[in-house]
Amino acid sequence: MSQPPVSLAVLRTAAMTASAQSPFSSKDHWRFTAGDWQLAEGVLTQTETTIIPHAYYSARPYADCTVAVRFRAHDDGKGVKAAGLILRSQDSVSGYSVHYDTKNDQIILTRRQFGARRVELARQRRVVMDAGTWYTADTSVIGGTITVRLDGKTVMEVADAEPLAAGIPGLYTSQGKIDFSDFSVDGTPSELSTPWRIRMTYDVPEEQAIATIDWVKPICKQPGRYIGWPTVCRRADNELLVVFSGDRSQHVCPWGKVQLVRSSDDGETWSKPETICNTPLDDRDAGIIETVEGTLVVNWFTSLAFAQASYGGWLKRLESPEILMEWQRHADKLTPEIRGRWLGYWTRRSTDGGKTWETPVKHFGNAPHGGIRLKDGRLLFVGKRSVDGCTELIVEESRDDARSWQQIGTVPQNPEDDRNQYYEPHVVETGGGRLVAMFRYHFFEKGSRKRREDKSMLRQSESSDGGKTWATCHTTRMQGYPPHLIALKDDALLCVYGRRRPPFGEYACVSRDGGATWDIENEVRLAAATSGDLGYPASTEMADGSILTVYYQIAQQGERTCLMATRWRLK
Image (tube, rainbow, N blue to C red; front, side, top):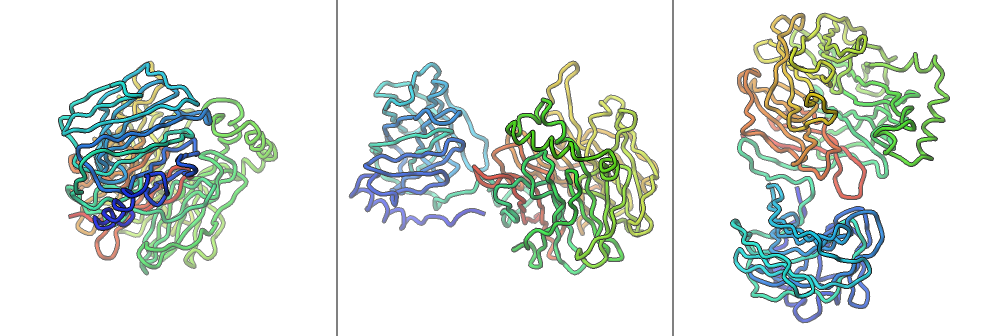
């Protein structure tokens, strides 16, 4: 899940080397997590202005110490242009951080531990720091008391009730080009309680209350391109297939294609992407299942949202005016006949393992992860569509191996909810034959246009007659979206979803009573993330009883989105 730990022997060797030379005499004294770090004439400069790179001094760890450095912020970039000190770092995401924000003239002291949320300990505003001027930052940690100074003057002194153990010091920058010089550490060397390591931004604790995480890693990257919204399928022969929308320039754009990657070794390695669908419109949100007959069925929907990007709203902020005009020129080429032919919700069949694909078939509703195969051989699809401006949750079935679809029912929404805020359903068949469906829901306070992510809980409904009639939707305690559901071999139900508010990431929840209750107190965190551009996880149970969950998010600062996976198991 992370880079190999650094042994104490390595740290001791680095310490002896560093003690004999200046910390800025060689980059070999440092470990860098990201960014463009340049060392010249005793000055260490980080030039990337859009990310938050870290540099860790590979000397001995310290508990009680003073860390000092001179820094100068350049006027490059549009961000906060902050320099940072790090103390007592046990790994690359843990430690005290002192944030010298030159744009907003403030200093912020925080504490973070791996697997826990960042805690702000203190903030001092109106501390003037000008670009182009050298300043001396130094911070002391004695026991649980942290003293922060700028140019020798005490800015804040804080007593931390939960002080961190010994760790190594370091530096970081935030959204700015920063010069550092005269770095020093004064204190008594200590020992680390566990080997120090660089953790990835998506790492999560391996041992959780009800689950063990085997690994978390990217499985498909398209450098410089945006990809997302995947679904995974494990075939009868154990081949894994993941479909997604790939080769994109943005979250919304004209260029999306439905693509597929394969794995024949339980997700350890993956093939290069194959393009399945490339209509003249934006091909988005793909799902996949294998039928009883071994047919692969892929679903997706097409969109013209990119054609509205130049008119305003959040779409206008995605790209430059020149790029938006290119999108508009593409949209202008789409005749009414082309739009009428391709705009809608689709499925497509392959009877040869995905080598060739039949003509797409339209169906009535949309769901990003598609339908499911029932025990009786039918295919069932719970989707969402708009009828006269109102959202309708519809249920479709196929009795001819996805050659055609027929509507068999609708799902009643809760009358206390805004019916137009239901989205992106998925459904599962329980061991007893009951159907459980879940829906993404957006919550807005009355009279407000701002969505409350903390109150946007998944909605749930059930059917006991094969999908013809359904209970009125009710609110669960799971926050995130969209849902993807599977039934495990022991009849437990698993629901996975992305969370686009802190702490960002991919999450899972288990029900052991057919969906009557969900164990939210023991929610599993499958992956961490640094932003809300993430989610759409989907899972499959492996032959050995472990679970593979795929999703999309940003793997490293400065990159575009990619496909990632977590291999994990319930205890």
